[in-house]
Image (cartoon, rainbow, N blue to C red; front, side):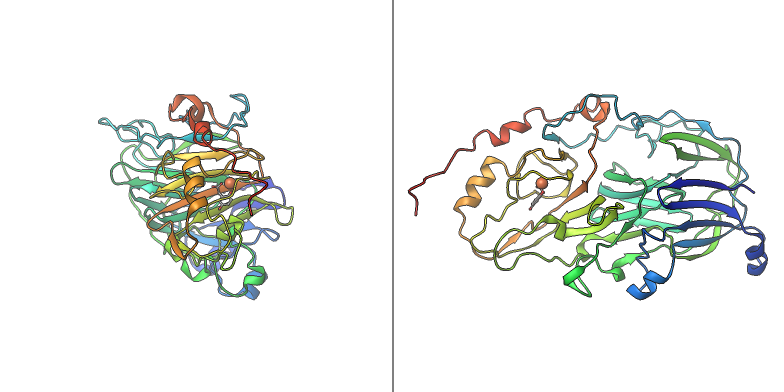
Length: 418
Ligand SMILES: O=C(O)Cc1cc(O)ccc1O
Ligand SMILES: [Fe+2]
């Protein structure tokens, strides 16, 4: 059986044969998906913080056949994915994209990995990445089969598939969404600090699949796509990778409905940093600095007095990539649409468009519902984000007039104003 090991910072992830346990479990063959993450703990599904600190994250998977039986991995054409972050020149400007177009399927089906047409011979595909990915469907639902079981993920839900987990995605018609892939850290709940025992995303609302397996041969076999050192590889095997009859452990995929988020915000005056809306964070090794935060702007009450309530104008040491699942975003009623995106890179100034500024400056400050029926989100990172050639050019969705939304802003400064 194979033994694969890749060192990522202080983390280690390996798959190995487990003969002693295998005998103990009385199972014929099983694989172990094992990840020690002493300093990057998540353990979202353990009920208490005390328990959380006691355990590393790992799972035992009991398989019909071990994954080691496959043909050699061959390099795979990457489609729109890229691992070349210098293919275009850096661009510090504010960027906004119109809703990304959903590629039209002809007779052939479209592939989740490339978003392009896939060969009909590829009868089943499973992916496995060297990092955690967080999936945010915006239109259409995803039926995600993982080695741990199945998850139906609908818009306003998110799911996280962790490093090394094999999965495949089924869609039911036109489907679009956002994916964040994080290297070198796992997502975890943010520390609640003075918030105390409960609030924001509560552990009880995270759902984990139950074991599901298939034991069948199909014509053409199964293709497993793996991302390795930034590149895609594919291998053939004649049995389904979803052959786990039982599992236990705490290293699992999971999903979460954003409607369960317990929103905390200013109830007196001033505008809280949107980090107060953090659902999940992937910490860096620097305390308080995230590789990635997943932040939402959920429906809530706005009650702050003597306060400009929409987002303030600001520059941020983090890069902010935003998407819209449904509705409107309060700082930009027009222009930022569901299925579109914006990127405000680190220290690039941004804030509400001129319309929003004028309206909010004159608004009577009474309690009001904010963002009703909407869901915007932000992937926020302490790292700089490079935009791909596809994002800047090929997709043809970049809104070249974005900067104009701030041009009508005028000075209201009046030193004599009381
Ligand atoms: O830029 C944005 O729209 C996101 C955002 C919202 C907010 O209320 C405060 C800061 C911030 O970055
Ligand atoms: Fe911002």
